[in-house]
Length: 405
Image 1 (cartoon, rainbow, N blue to C red):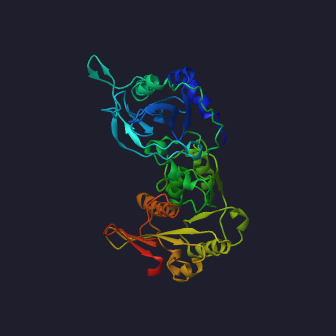
Image 2: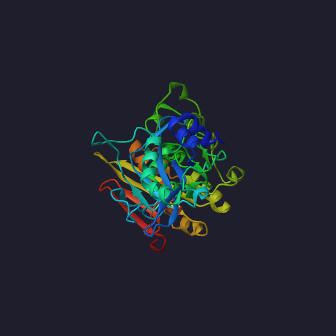
Image 3: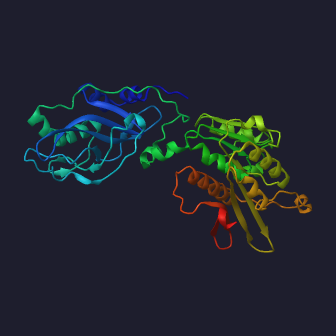
């Protein structure tokens, strides 16, 4: 959805930020940060340079009200010097990098500054953003303003165009962790989740909180009490008997857009529903269904991860394994022929208990989602694994690379 201009929302809801704009600071907002360009400073030769300040915004609510995270700032530029041509002391808190979006690619943060104000001889934090910026500008830019008559008050604030976002709230978790650049690696994906049972429901919950363009979910079953015991979220009694697709669509409607869940099963004839899909999670527990889904995805050239859970009880505690297997484009048929996933319904399927436990469903989904994020460059990948097995008995994960299978 396209939101109201972030600039207007933040300025209208925060008097301290509005004061900075009114005074003439060159302000813009990006990836959960307030950026102030055109900050003059001196080098050791007394030459004039221009840098930028970045300070993190912590959302208080959904209206645009924000607060500070702490008393520090980031600075894009060399270490500023004073009138004595020496680096300004007692402000450098070490090197620091910050990845912003393309609209702020000119702002390359290099260091963190830390300087608390003293009130009656006691170090204290800043009451608001206006006090914080004024204090740091006085320290950083004061010598350049005195020597060259330079000013940071250029009235060059940049009012951003409304940015499309799938989220109805600012993703403050991503900006707080300073991983916006990694999160952007997922933006263009259209994800399919086939099966919204125990593991599929958790995969959906994890993926809803990523900025992927669209999530399409498929499940023809109804939501019953036992589903509530192995899926995320609270149970509303009115959900019982509805389709799983309707239940989960309702749960996430207020959080984000782009979640399209349908009460249909997927088979080899479901190709039209997968137009534009870039990655899929197969979360079904019936071999014959899995076989038809594999036919479809392999035929369409869509990469996917298939999950599986095999738990049993032989008179004592539960034992078993969880599985997550990646089928890459161009290798999927070969992987399928290795028989790593159950593709048939044996006689025992008629009578099996099909034990599933919420934390194992969640862990199985987490394995699949983490592997997907590795493939997109969000997580580090040392040795690319196409087959992961988790043994409940010793809580160990065994991974097999493609060349090992």
